[in-house]
Length: 413
Ligand SMILES: *Cc1c(COP(=O)(O)O)cnc(C)c1O
Image (cartoon, rainbow, N blue to C red; front, side, top):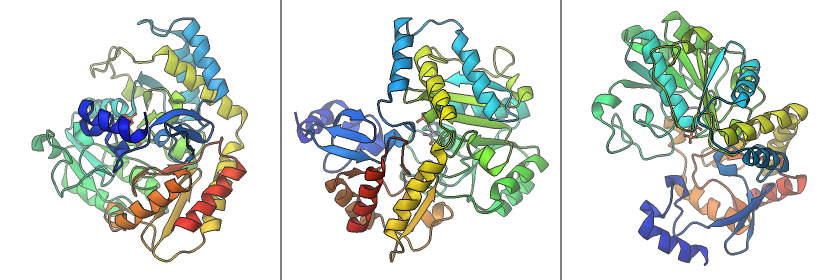
């Protein structure tokens, strides 16, 4: 069946024809039947260079042989036990070693679960109710954070989604990204704030890069007000380097959420934190968190294999950075556009200057993006189908792929 026929059938069985909203492309999305390295193969037999990489997890590319072997070895021994397993200790030790100050780990199944647990833990630990997030920051599709949360539809001051209670939304305060002053004055006014949750590089409406000293400043401000800093590194963890943004920018949050890359392409999330705070998590403490699939053996096997591979190939980060630099050089300055990149994260914004926050990102010419996106697809390059989703390179993208991506950009802008 071709993609059009498959989507037609899907529309009757899946809301909007898809399992997650961003995949709903008009008039119909292409269906993938196979993937390897940097390429997706569609139901039509077309080969596409993938710059979406499943929205971030696939740092090593699709179907990486070493990750596949690790999964197969675990499969051989069974894939779910419901008991502790040695791998959770091994993996936790690796994560803790790479994130100074983070002393303990709770493994969950998705990034959303990790942020949900982080927020509950912050409230349990501080005894306060309020939460602050950055406008346009995305932390998973759950109630406390589905408010001005990146690429979704947005209305001022109300939840992004029907079904999120205004009472819940009212406890989530928003500040513009890259505006330390706004955070400072909010925390001066509000005494009841448990935590500030923020992506160090906004990845779901960008990438939007932190301006000079922003991360240091928010660390200082939160500390001064005794408010926990939750750094959501679900995208940036092991993406912009070992130890993520906290290593790159030299800041120490109170809690860290990881996901995506640390599962090697299988579902995972992890909550890391200072030991004193993590001791509050059940069964050590009173903040409840539990899950049938927490620390599931397959995801841990894939995650451990990924991190081991990365540590044997530390030069990949310089190479990936070189890759996005060469795409930027190929494009050069273009009227009405700005190219933003950090390591293997990149995006062409249809706006003269790179956006510094949500309000500026919303000024992008999304109609122009939609045309550009279709032309790129016609030339065999699959970009995430939104002006507001980050593009990713993987280590599987060859120099030839990168040249083709650069050439496609110049042809399609
Ligand atoms: C993807 C993402 C999440 C949610 O992770 P899921 O595994 O999709 O639940 C949370 N925070 C950030 C920054 C993300 O990019």
